[in-house]
Image 1: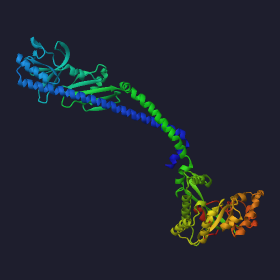
Image 2 (image 1 turned 135 degrees about the vertical axis):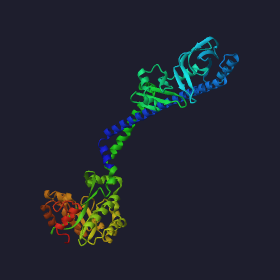
Image 3 (image 1 turned 45 degrees about the vertical axis):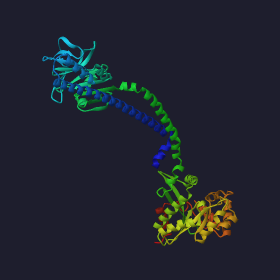
Image 4 (image 1 turned 180 degrees about the horizontal axis):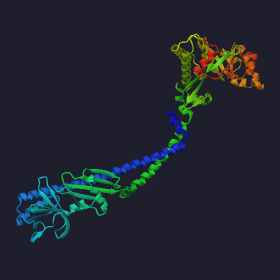
Length: 535
């Protein structure tokens, strides 16, 4: 997770732009899905309405013909026609009832009355079988005369009667664009009852393929580049099909698209604007410093402290680095972030725990070693430090290990005096680190009463050039003697520096002349090679 954040933070504008484009794309995708769902819902509503109508007139025609053939005589008497007109009046979908003779000729009807001579009907367009096993003969778009009004209508006949489905019903039925209505006949073939004139013959033929008719289809057809809804109408022999070509879909939803596209672009811009500062912040060490001071990222290094006359190691200073993925951070890189984040105590805790665990588990019990650990001034509290150090030593007991505390000079050291005194009384030794770079004078050093003064490496580096800075080394040594402290020189890199420091009276030193900061296994090997560990 941390690696991903750092990778994203390397190019915040680019990655924020990609995120903005992704959001824009997702916004348009969701908008497209919503429009698709709305289109399919519309098709479903149309199917439901059509199915209700077709089922209604199919059942009514079937039941009406069944009743007429059972209850009514096949004659054209005024009394019989009057009763038939009552049936039409009580029906919901029928406009006319006709009476047929044995040769299936029309003798009379509720609208035209008795015909001057029997009228022979056209051959049926379709023959269907009812659930009762009776065959119905159907003519679609048959010219009829209703109240002197010539119209084309659907006529259903069975036995001695026919019914004329109201043209108004059929007008509503066939008013929907881009649709077909098919009727399954006795032989299993499908007769096209209606096909919208705007549909191409290729589309009509495509919808007549078996896979469109054998089971319900409701969705987008990649083959036909259109939204298709095809389903049998329950309780009837009809199959209704509706098609919305992709071009018409875009036309119908052009207004939606005109709204969605600017909103998608705006969402992408907002994400870009919000993400750039976040990604930049992820690149800052302050954002990840809390996770870096955990044990798995903390690297403890041990730089030997040597008694310079004999060259014998007597201890070490614990130095720290932080592993930040493949990079190893120096203190100068991460300590400002620790300071800004207020993580001084968390870092000191982590260092003490890891250093003591590594040293106690790898050094022989009989080895005598001074271990110097630096602490932030704000963390120099006697009770808290004792609880931390002694708690860890209780977990990893070691007879020869002695922990010394290193503190740095401050403008106001009054707050440290009582805490340092308490720690010294408890048996801890105290060093003032980087001495000479801060605010110390003889009075303040006496008040702290340190056990060691550590000469900052900047003084040692300039010794060979005989700078004013290096000329202060004798003064530092004099202050150390005045307060009864030993002197440790940091940053010794060659024999000439060592010899001059010895001449000044410095007893201890550390630096690359003796050893670089070492990881625990290398440090143990160094001590063993120097004869500082028992066999």
